[in-house]
Length: 348
Image 1: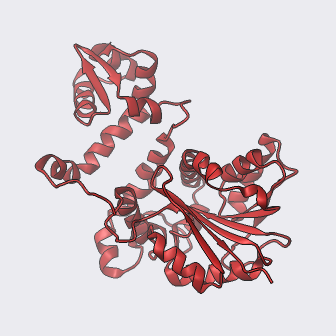
Image 2: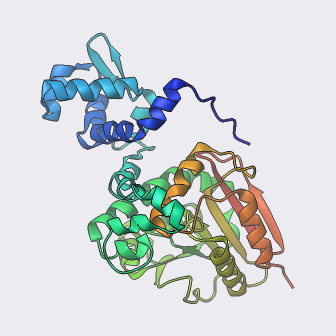
């Protein structure tokens, strides 16, 4: 159960002006302010305005906004990054998360203009912001290479943040060949292969995404153990000879009904003793939070597919049992509101 903060005037003001708060944050990223303050803490407004290439009045507005939000601090006349800003918004730092903000700026914000209409219609009317063929954002992105790169960069950054916790949450070395369904640019697969040197991994994703993954796998020197399988895993068969399938940040995309069909197909594709694993941000079973899942779900309704959400633990566990898995194990307590569910197919 999540303990939500009491609503006060300051919190209501931040909620009502959330779009403005984001634009201040995004401007700081795009202008390189946080990178510059990391290298030159204590710079004053005049020096920062000159470095960023903006006038004094715009600099006052930007710096006042970011200070009020707590993203930077002001000491005398000089500015510094807040501790969390230094960890997550400065290039080269292990927790660098700015690419996720690019996804918000270029995909989530334009599409969520249609959230109210999508609520009423029960479908993803925000997709109108991304012209092309297909009924989902992911189909449309293949027709917009620049936006597809923004999306994949964001998912890669999210994966890098969560990877360390995934690698420590379970011993993937018990498997021989794992399929990373919807594995994107190969970030997860590469991390798993490095951590478990006997494990083979296949990224199963669309042809355009697999091409991105193949290049990353080659650069990592792992082409002998990490492979790609282009196709649609909702319809196409899984590769043969596998003993595990992992879904990382994937089952949020679809309805419970579509997820059940996919998990049944997964169960049929695995040998006895094989496993399906679900790694994701998990909503609380009482549906009161956490805030990250509550704010993430509107994207799936209004933009992505019109049918998904960030589901509670209990939803995934129920679907896995319905799909035929004999044992379902929950690994909770992971950072970033993440969790892992491991479901094992009964041995003969």
